[in-house]
Every structure is written in structure tokens, then in C-alpha cells.
Image (cartoon, rainbow, N blue to C red; front, side, top):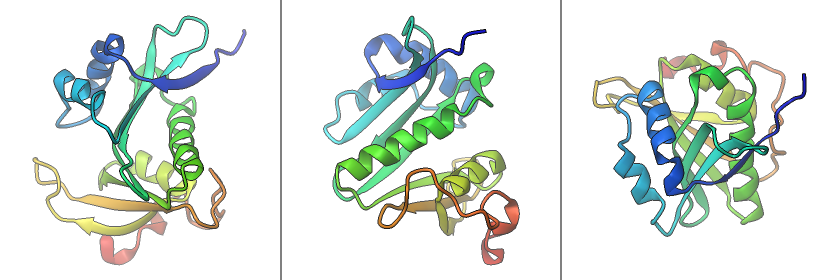
Length: 175
């Protein structure tokens, strides 16, 4: 079976229905289709989708991040449920980090629900570090971790083999 090549590209209005559908099944509370449409117009916003190179018709995932100065902020990222487990989130995050590095950025920051251990493990594997816990960050009252990826001295996608992929690497004072 031939492997499908998946790459990112800037999102367009044609992608909004698929993106909003993925968001609704992945993120709580979800962004609206209109919120995504507004990101297409913002000066410092970057909105990318993952599609296959052959048809470019199915959105497998997306990321929205702002990059107004030295630090990029990943605002939302999700992969379609039936496309998970194939490394697409890792691919998309590496693309963001690479972009920020090429543009001479210094860091990337994001927030993640404390209960989202799969995402937390991925972020830590890629080199993101928990910088603090934000109490009742989400509308439902759940806390969030704020994570930081510092671009100086880091190689894209490399991770130390020590503790980065398990929950033991969460600082005890943040649990």
C-alpha cells in the first residue's frame, strides 16, 4: 500500500467546514466557524491545515497560532479523529517550530488541559516545558498547563530521553 503524503498549507475559506467539524469533536469549548474565518484575516495570525498532496481535499488537522513578535502562541491545534496516531500532530508542531525558527523567533507557547495527557506527552517529547499551572483556565473550571518551547540551542523535534514522555516529568508542585 502506498503511503499518502500529508503536508501543511495555509487554510482557506474552503477548509472552514472541515476545520469547524474537527474542532467540534476535539476541543471544548470549540471555536466557531466564524472564529476560524476571522483568523484568516488577522495580520499576525497563521492558520494552517494538513491535507494530502494528491487531492488536497481532506483536512486531517489544523493549527492556529499568532506570531506578532519574538514569541509564537499556539491558540488551537487538532487532528481529525480517524487520522490520529499517524504522527500528524507532531508533523504540524514541528512545522510551526521550524517556521518560528526561520523567522528568528525565540519561543513558542501554548496551553493544554491538565487532563489531556496524550497532548502533554507529545509536547514534552518535542521539547516543550511546563512553566506554570493556570487555575480554572477553561470555562468548565479545568486548570491548564502553560508550556514553553525555547528555540535557542534546541534542535527541532529532538527530545532528551530522560522523563520527557511520561507523566513523571510533570513537576510535583504543578500536579
